Amino acid sequence: MAQPVPGRCCASQRLGHAGGDGGFGVDDAPVREGPVEVHLRQRRFAMRSVAGWVAANGPLRNDMSVDAAAAMLWTLASPEVHRMLTVHWHWSREQYQDWLQETLTAALLP
Image (cartoon, rainbow, N blue to C red; front, side):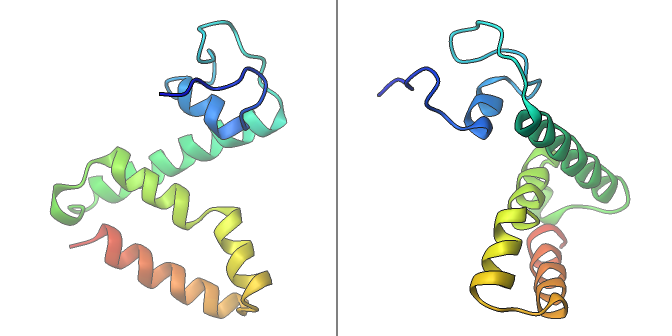
């Protein structure tokens, strides 16, 4: 398996190697968090909080874990997906909101 080149990975990759806390890189050396890393860590925490709330208020689809639900929320509600659909596909705000609601409901709820 190829090893990452130090200093050549994106913030989300460094965050992913940090065990979720954003504190350590792939070589266990401390990694300084810049604004991007802080934002990603905060978004991940927020998505996990939302997924936990959904799970506490009713079952998730097929006994999905809170972490799996958080990953779906993280991905589907990402700024990148929003931009792809609204800028590149010219969806209106209402189209995007309807799609996100329908997609998350189908993905997360029984």
